[in-house]
Image (cartoon, rainbow over all chains, first blue to last red; front, top):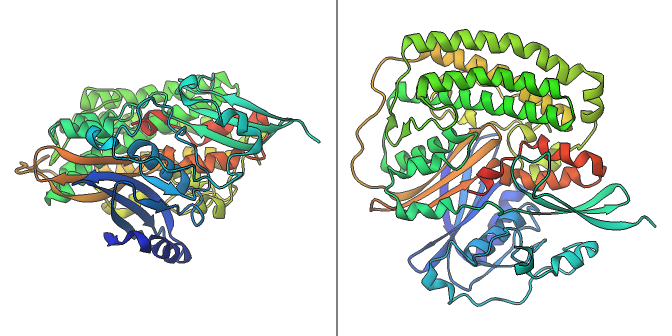
Length: 148
Length: 359
């Protein structure tokens, strides 16, 4: 059973994920790290029959716009929202964007080094219209500080 | 048209020992959508890794969770050992396996009690936790701690299990196995319990796979996925056959966890019988330089550990993907379409560990 990390380009992410999805692999986890001035994003997939494990690794600078894979793996939006809230990674076209409210924490981008946080440029809202249910509109529009 | 409303569930709720919040979108009594949020007790333990020596961090890793604590320490240690190319002595591997399975027994019994409490069967709740005390006593006997063992370290373990302790564990296992029989029968055959479990919160095999679910929650939907098959620690030398069910409902989740208790008892007996003589640790020199992913089967399912060392004594990145986080998507799916009154029970059936998720 293999367990390997494959470095790919950001532009090739969706294509590689689609290949694994077609092969029936399960999304195991997505995580971000910050190293030497750039993000290191790891998308891990598991084959439960052979127990093989493959991690797609992307190195990209701050303010890169990362495409969401939630169209292929619907659970991916939890991990993508986590990356966005804890590291400030900008993910576009998430099926469900929690607007930085998945984690109810005061600190913004707490896992990004303090000196790097000012460099992050906030993008306009990238949620697909209707991703947050109609009935939730009032709730999701409550300013974050009012709930803490 | 049915009246639509949003009902907040949690973060404080009688069924939740730990805080998680769900915004439930209801049409009359039926849930049509769920928006979860976490972070109420977020501790940022992952980022603490940059300020602790990688050997010291073992203790922090173990404190990610107050239930499956030993597994987190083990996952971290194995990831560092993988980066540094350390081969742990066989006896240490067996000792780790023994404590991992003791962890699983106490975690599953804790869940059985919480589940019984959630559907209002207080006597069953007491019985489950009464039995759980016995395995906690064995943890205390062998490690000195009932929940946090602190026996793991990079390069092996720091405590051994003597033959007397082994005999005490075996006799406790006999007791637990005997006591579990009526518990299992009550969970799976009692009429009123089945009313709350059969056909409630069904998650199909396809849904469980698509949503990346893991552990007993996924196995109850028919997914044959158990990380112990990877053969880490001593599992490669023991007989491990994943326990699955096909119904995908609350009943199946109960059945899988109850049968896993018997499986853990069998694995403990095998490990105590086969444990070899020898050292329990090897000296560790140098600092980790490189990165590694390690997967373990925690009581709640697959946990993923990522460690990235940069050649000094501090780790650059430590990441735990806990099973509860992976199962959140599946939880939301099971709640959709369920009755509002079933929501507390459905949350309990994934065996949520918010402490892990809020690492």
